[in-house]
Length: 555
Image (tube, rainbow, N blue to C red; front, side, top):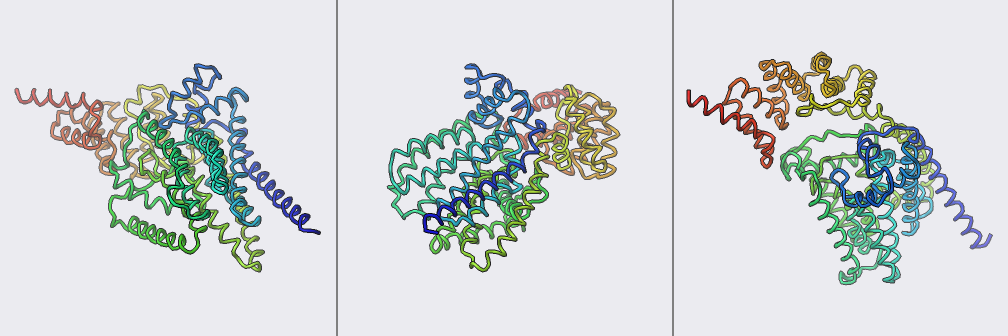
């Protein structure tokens, strides 16, 4: 066979491998097509009036509205198109999420081929990236459409940047800027693209002077504009975890290594993670994390001098992960979906190493890799149910996190479907104190407090260290007009976790009712300390305290 024939056969073999990866990925996610709307899907998709029809009024609303705290109109527009094409069922949304993910898989594979990885290494890395369980949240959760869609635009723009870098033909820049703008309008954190392009220039491309990187400036401007629009227009306040930037950033240093652990051993994945806040650099977890990050930085600098291409993939991981580490704070400290783009860098390191292995080793490595990929696929197949079945999702969330009764929740109408789902979740896990507490919470919201009380007591019999359960017991005592019991329960909740604003607010209310002014004043002081810029929450209580103090003074 001549060289051309050999090359053609190799190419056909490579694309056959890619087709197999795409088929395996589709099979893993096929279980989501007959699923449910879960979590944010209920408000952001199922009940979103902007998705009802593709009218000019709704289009204008899509480009004016925020999705929770995010300005991501293209993601919402894509969901509106799905509604128009597929109707109100979930299958169309899930199918399109999968299509976007498969598009990303193709772009990831061609990225590694374009950067001169061997076919074997590129297929190995693509398989891991496509089938890794941490990707499930991004692909199988309808509301996380922004992740797969923004990554599709991001990777498209990066491919074009590589082409531009090699040819320096400026006509490609307009399309790069267009794709980058689309990525930003799907998810603000794609603003890392200029940094990824610069990292490519320093590693894979020739070392050009900074003045030759002027095409990155418009990208920086685009990213800054979208960031300003998002941060200034968001209806939700920007609040650091623990009320402190220091606490947030020290905690995030430990999150980096929690992510690395999930990448290596993706078990115990959850829709939510309870991340313990860290407030001191001398905390062993923080100190070890910071020292490890310093060591990784030093190693990356050394690689940049000796093995620049390996340094690029480490850089990709940390550059794309950095916006997810609460440098600018947002509500969650850790989520699987935050690894969707960074995983490209982590797997890129594996691909870079694998293609440098001796040929004699490759068969053994291939066998081990195949087993690993099959295991990842099976884990992902099981994890898909968490993001496509309402009851399974509730079990996963509410087994992990105990919830307090929202303030004045007893005046709200409960969601009957949600209540039934929580009841089913509790029946499937009858020994979970957290689930018992959460079921009681939903019963209170449904205006059934008498049914809630024995469940909370049973939850505390199983585990009396849950502050939310003590808080809920205190709220029920307040509803039943038993102030002494309410004080006992709320004080216990405060002892277990003194950071919850509403514990102190409700204590202030009960103490005021009992005319215990010193205790009421201390509770209100804690309210102000926890929410120093928000006074409307406790203005009535502050006024009541002033009236009582004046009344007692007159006596």
